[in-house]
Image (spheres, rainbow, N blue to C red):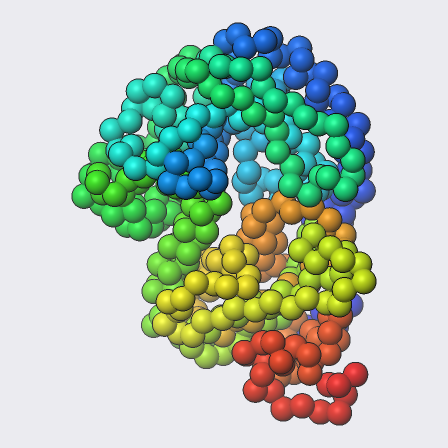
Length: 420
């Protein structure tokens, strides 16, 4: 199927189901009112709170002394696993409102903790938190609260860009059941000489997805004994994507290149992704186009905001300045696809963030949307240049504008039509 035919094909069934799921999203403010009622019924004063915790959270503020907490869905013990960020959210076709609802329903029972000297912390609050992190299913916990949880949900639509649930300082936390810990995770805990990178890659090879691994890393449960520490959740997500990505890049280094130029496309939550794969040694770039009125470019009168980062066959040594966690999430998805095929390629990922993306949901949507882009039929083009020109017709910028930002597109020969 050539590129022109491909871009006109109707959305596949999965994409249509996701679109319909988005249209069924409910009013956020109605959710907040309902949640507050449920919260009042579930948490009584500062008495002991019993519930199921599917995950943990480690903050970044005041690093290296951070807020570290247990997350518990208020009034939803029976389906607690649905409140933990995972690829299942994509399969469900969640809307931005759904993500907001789930995250604001999580009680964060937290304490302040220095990130270091946590290797042997298996007792008390930190020990309970670690047990929750390494378990392969939600764990029932009993939490003593030092204070009445702070529930300030009197917000307007303009205030919902970064949804968080209620917070309370935890006096104590104890397991109410024995958590089930997979044997590969136990192995990484027992091997005190295994560095964090090696442990992450081992778990990935054993079938653990990056969501599981970043939670374990965040809890300070990976790495050599004297190096184990709490890792803020946001940092751990990027660290795992980057580490596993480097491992996969090494795996494809000697693979043959793909035979022809391919164009893959997918769209979710107001984010459209085009992935152009071309024959040659590994090379990668992510270019983001953020529309006026979208979450990262909120001024409706502003122009299109472009950001880009790239790497060559040996990877990159510097910090990803402009595209941050999205860079590593999209790269991981591309590398997984190539490693599965036993090939390597040049990869240009173009992300168009429309004004439908009004609230940030996290880089999981980047990872999963690009992963799924490879599951359906793809388009083809004669050359890399033809592919870029063809895709640019469906973007809100000209090729000339794209060339000024993109390293991989910069070398394309311009034609008069490129300035339109």
